[in-house]
Image (cartoon, rainbow, N blue to C red; front, side, top):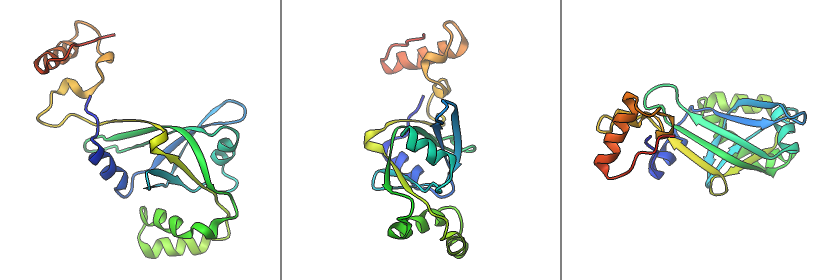
Length: 183
């Protein structure tokens, strides 16, 4: 399965409009997934949970998270982060990072709408959290391009031995000098 190169990953994370989905664990052990706005800056995914958001309460209880950023059309690029959140600014310190909040809003709506949104929600306290890419497990993948074998659509471990796709993957890997492991 093709991975995103470092350059492709940085370009994808910088594109406007992609939502992040953050998975947290509630205090009762239940999983929770919430779509959120984000920005990738300084090697970190930055997210701004509101004071009373369930996922912020979950993070305070258990900082380990999984975040997926993907697209549902085109090359189906995906980036998955697994790691611990870091609270950069606690709730109530919003004015110290208003510029970050505005940059995040401008990734999703135009500047005029972002300024209006910020003026209307300024009195709703938020925290600023980060997931450091360098400290997280990062997994990427995408659809094969035209010049890549279609058998690369999945990781080899997903193919049942003897199936058409396992055989195609084995042929492609043998041509490249690698060995196929189907488990």
